[in-house]
Length: 417
Image 1 (cartoon, rainbow, N blue to C red):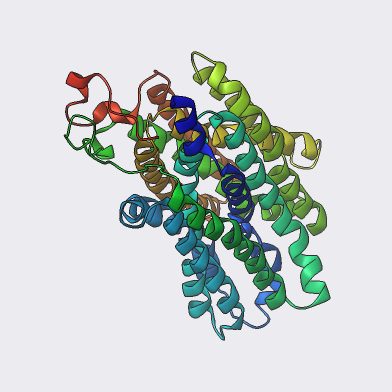
Image 2: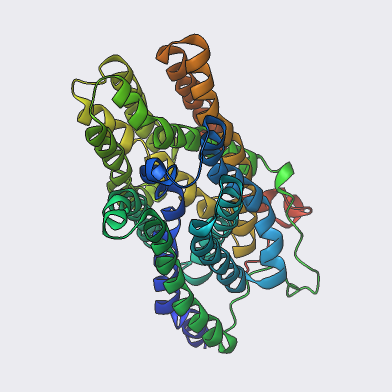
């Protein structure tokens, strides 16, 4: 009887898996498809240094704001409806912004697009926990891999698409990828009416409502937010500054751009490795240490020898992105319920991206003010320290539900998935 119930609860997961992977593939397109075309866009829309810097900050800021708001939306609408709304926002923003006549409407619609993807960032980990509680590592590996592929696809093909048509058709075309996500999730939403998959606090068997979780009082939530902030700050510095830095050091524009593509695609192997390796470790901080060493070698090599062995230094930094895969995985490893995963995902990504948002801008400000790339690169050392501090906090095997009222007395909360 119990086996029948389990099969009923977990049936129809193929559509959910397809929807999770497609959503992950589309998450970074709006962020990384515009920078390679900025020179062409400036022929029609006037970008100043200020608005270019603002554009670079929009993604982490939008991800931060909507990361904090999305858990409330999940409670109101449920995971699937929240995801469908997020995709609709992303599609609408991407289709409309190429037709804007000046910079601020373009930026405003970029915010709409990134709001959709920010919501999608938060929804994915609890969706994995809801539909695949028995395959968290494997499915997380799959969707983090798709994020890495999407991060590589957009900058790699944005210029060829623009060459065939225009920059408008190039950045607008990625809306098609997002739109496809609606197909499996709409079908899944309809199918799930016949399958009970609880995802938010509901009356427990004892008749008492499961306690609400306040992430602001959770060491796990704060630790993961700090860890994600230190990691994401480094990644966004590379996305923003790697090509112009290498070009300033003497590499040609095409090679500098290819180095960014190399950095992006190296998120792929670590995305495959991390969710299969880290859950087996008693102390995940061991894996963090390995990838942190990659970051450090990459940072030092790119600064000290930017034109010699560049591919190796960029490759080491690219492998350092394993820390991002660890952060996404820990959203489920440091929660026991779908509800807890959603709260932890929203809080960690909200505060984490907020902390990361200012670093790419400060990197440029420090470089210009000091006239030294060394002073700017020292900020990456600070990010390393911050990331390791967060890793130490989330290393012990505790969950966000442990901070819920009454958790100390009850031992653990009722499972919701």
